[in-house]
Length: 427
Image (cartoon, rainbow, N blue to C red; front, side, top):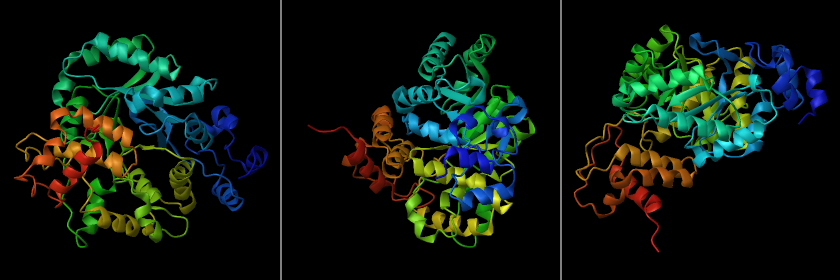
């Protein structure tokens, strides 16, 4: 890797100081490289990849890199600093991520960095009956952990119930927090089966300046249409593309999450060629969508930070966001995952279990353990399901859920496996 002086000589903003303070590296569309030739030269000499494009989130005027740092599975300040050095100055957090330690890591890493030079979010699950005082207490806790006076975006987190949107206290709380300078913009995040319905309500009632929604190539009608002749695809969340387009029309910023369809990155490594990876292809596909402004992705190692940021640089080098090679790589991955991946927001299995097991939520927790390798998060989320968790599956004899998945997932086997993996630890 080049040292800071050589990087500066190439025109890159890879040094942490320049990424935090420097010239056009923060908040311009041309990104930290001066030209395509600079990027090619930097790659030739082994420079780290850099964010090449910055975008504006709707009518907020808030400028962010097209790829943001997700902290749901990370609490390492060193990773935050590395991301910043790559031009990623957008950090997404929540009070629930790593039980608050994700926010603490971001606060520690950014201590001393000028606050105006990076964009910060946090989230709270504001319930249908929650008061404005309770919401304010949650926000104050996040601000303390993040070591800041304000967050740029504050999201109502994991919304999948319109009644939560109807709680007038959310509007009142966010207006008060804005006046107090604690938040700049309010948002809505979600990936459940009723996401489109919640987004419709929030957009129509001016409850969100920015939305953060699960959206991947597997949810993109364009991708589905191209592959219908190859293997069976069922439209998931058919209303979601319409709602995202509606958000863009109303100048509500749109950020995509869960862009990697389970993130089993090693499953297709053998098919990656010419420095192109599946993760980069998946990110590039989403970022090319007219429905999306930017993406947030969990960054849990130095290697995947560089891989993900490489999607931005690669697009600049190719001069396009959807190279022909991307479709083949995405199709191969989708084919491999088709019969084992529980799609966010599908929920076609809802009500299939007489015992009340929330199958989709159970399989989401299994994904955290098996695909993401984050057993702590998986156990915590599974425990939070209580009686709706998978423990009843261990003694089930009727298997009423066996044919409940439109993708033919072996639901009984997967839910029993979840119970064994994530259920109560027996002494």
